[in-house]
Image (cartoon, rainbow over all chains, first blue to last red):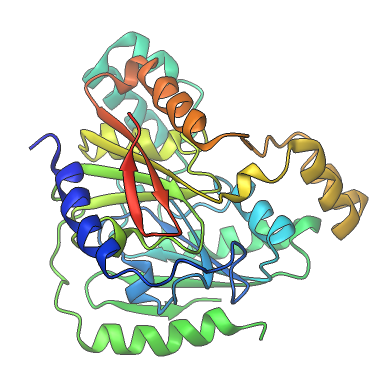
Length: 168
Length: 168
């Protein structure tokens, strides 16, 4: 169904709002941390990572990329006071399954030349190895002056078992 | 505590993994939609928006920006088959509270000149009005050829009541 998301929202939100009692939480994260992970449909960060409502920023993008999340990380850390970051990639990630050339070809085949032109300079930020990608992202952050003072740890979430294991 | 996030994860994930039974979900979202919303700590998308595990991509960044999420959206739609997008901003958003100049000043004061230089060309993508920002983002997407065929709706989540209300 083309509007299944809206149907889920309408039903789920009605029930959620009817029992909602957390309307006075503060804007800045109460436990001063942020989680960066993938948009993958199989990850429910609040439940899987034990995040209380109001406690932490949750940033999600394709692959859980630190570069792609840089703007959000700076806002989280410098403007809203988080001092800890959990960077979490996961097994069976879609980013392992294509490279930039393949992604651009798919867009051209699906949507035509005008659409392909809109993504011709886009770096899809794919990676061939999860553990290495975690290490690379953590190091990329630690190399930045603006990230000094932030405690960054790197993790892999296992979609097969529900377990998160620390890498660095 | 500087590692409260890690402590939460260790405790919460142990409990989650011990009762986890969804290890065989497919990589592509089973209900073919994506949700784009803010990283704000007061939003728990799975619970508040009724998203079943495995059903939808969840993309989150500072402000729920469509431009910032463009790479993830293309991957979600063109490579992983989602055809519906719920774009959801929220009341009391941090993005209403600063502009680019103020954000850069804060980074310089907090972290010094080297850090300030790292963000001097960064557009923090703040906005002065939530409803207008939803409309602008939906239109920005609808103006792109690569987004044709995707059903995009725009929403405001109310952090005071837990309600999501459709804007467009």
